Length: 242
Image 1 (cartoon, helix red, strand yellow):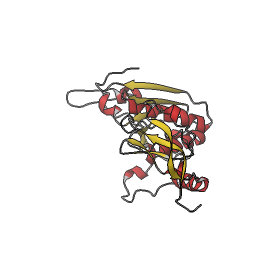
Image 2 (cartoon, rainbow, N blue to C red; image 1 turned 60 degrees about the vertical axis):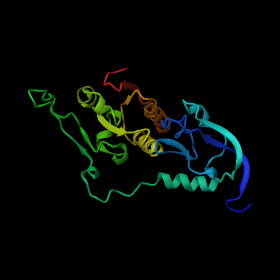
Image 3 (cartoon, rainbow, N blue to C red; image 1 turned 90 degrees about the vertical axis):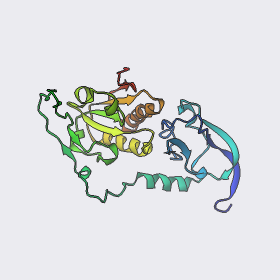
Image 4 (spheres, helix red, strand yellow; image 1 turned 120 degrees about the vertical axis):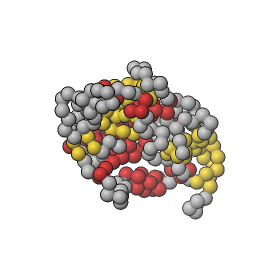
């Protein structure tokens, strides 16, 4: 059968009305057929979907179903090429910004506190902080207690530096807007290559943010390490839910 020919077979369909873009389905698809695009899960290509539905049980909103329709045949060779391409490191930023430099920041034991208009010193102990920019072998990850934090948390939770940064290496990611599969691969590499002592996921209470915890759980499984994991949930009003 020629390339691009259609056959009647089973593939996934995503209900965009139900999808919250949490990204939980992404690591469940070994073929890399799903991706978060503009805040919604999308089927990258019919030929990458084997129709077995491993992602079905992962969706907390019931937004994924299997249906039979005319699509391209499942192409194992194309899937291998797609997965290999996705696993290749992306080109470094051309701007030459400081995010290319991996630094462990030395902090004193006592923070500055707040006096008048002068607030406490930063407790950040590593740079960069975005998971996508951090090499798996970064020295500050070795033997570290890691905080995997959603982008919005530091804006909502006033005590973030005090409660989560001091004594921790921080990795920042957004399970809805970022490439969750790329983050998953990176975190699994970190766990395989560094002696991370623990991971604390700090996320917002909104449903899409739960994808960060699922990502950490899957990375631990892929990293083949029994890394302790705990979850802290922050409310949109800045209160600590757990």
